[in-house]
Image (cartoon, rainbow, N blue to C red; front, side, top):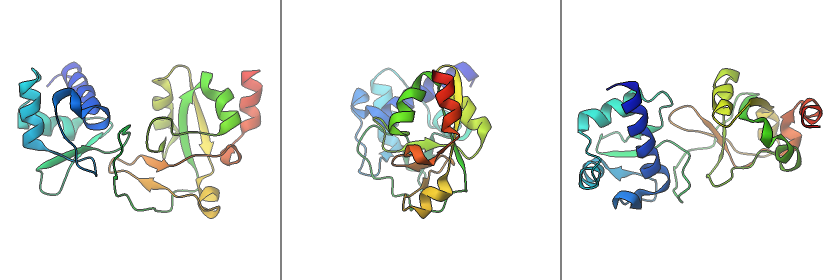
Length: 189
C-alpha cells in the first residue's frame, strides 16, 4: 500500500473510530472497541471496502500508531483522541519529569490564560520528546513546543496516562506547570 493510500485510509478510520462511527453505521462499545468483522462489513457497505490484510497493514504501519487490536485480534479501536464518550481504561502512571506539547504559535495567548485544555477530546496529548511535539505542532501552523512540568503536576495530584502508542494523556495542564512562559509572552506581544 502506497503512503498516500495509507494516509487516506488511516484518516477515514480515525474519523470512524474516534469521532463518527455512525458515518458508516458502526457501533463502538463503551471502551471504544469495534468488532473487526463489523467494521470491514460496514466499510464495504459504504463504498470503502478494505480487506483484513489491508487493515492489519494500516494498524501496523501507521506512523502514529493510532489504532490497536485487542489481544484476540477481533476488536479494534483508536488509541486516543476520541471526541466520543469512551472509557479507554488506562491506569494512572507516573510520567517523566518533563513532557512536551506541540501547538501552533497562534494558540499561545489562550494557553497563557487558561493553560493547555483538552478541547473536544478526552485528554490533553503530550509527547515524551521535543521532536514528536514539534511534528504535532507543525500540523496546526508555525510550531511552538511547550515544556510541561509533569513531575511537579504529579506531585500536585494530577494524573497521567499513557496510550498504547506512547502518547501521554492528562485532563488539563495549568499555566503554572508550563515552563518558560515568560519567553512565550514576549513572542506574542
